[in-house]
Structure formats: structure tokens, C-alpha cells
Length: 142
Image 1: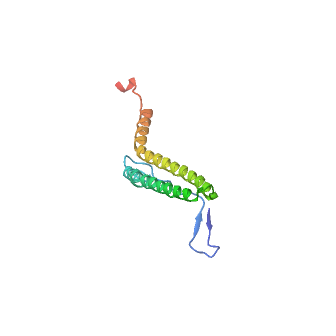
Image 2: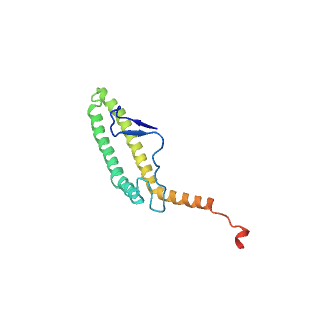
Image 3: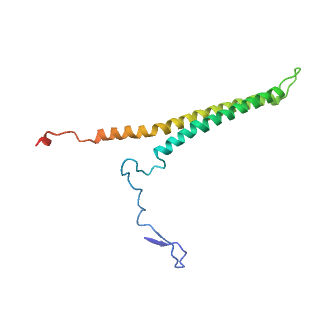
């Protein structure tokens, strides 16, 4: 079925509903795939996490620790009186620290996953090969 989508003005735009577009090509062998990354790209991404993202995130978290501690001290009680801001900053800083730690854990997990992907695929392929390999038959001897 073909439908004119130009509003009947006879233009070139047409939509066909009687078939589907072709699917993606199948994998053809080692090193050829439709994956969005290669083993080298995964290694590069894992290295970037390790050499830049993790250290920079930790450094930023530590900087926030120092700044917040100074502010908490400045707003804290002096001579028995202090600002309510001090307690709020402590609470916000605790939440910040938990979020930084969660991000560090996530980055570590992503790095580990990127480095483990190739071996996972390799071992999965070996397992599938073992499962589909045709067992020997006594008729093969003839």
C-alpha cells in the first residue's frame, strides 16, 4: 500500500506500508561488527576513566571537603552562639560526600566492565562453539 503524504499535490514524498526496511548486517567474523566501539576504543575509555575521571573526581571531592569544613567552622558556634547555616552545611556536605563516593564506585564499575567486555565475548563465543559443535558419530568412520 502506498500513501501520498504530500496532501494530494502530487509531490515526490510517498510512504510505503507493504514492506520493512532491511535489518542490520550480521556479524561476519572477528574484528568486524556493528558494535559502536572496538576493543581499542573500550581500552581507551577505561584508561580515560582511570587516568582522568577518577583522579579529577576525587580531587574535586577533596576540594569541596576543605572548603565546606572551613565554612562550617566559620559559621559554627563562637562564644556559645553560631549560625544555623553551619548545621545545614554539614548535612549538605554529607550528602555531597555520599554522591561523590557513589560516582567513584560507578566509574570503577564502568572501567571494570569496559576492560572485561572482550574476555566476556571471547568466553561466550567458546561456550557457544562447544554447545553447537557436532559430536562425533560412528558413521563418520566409513
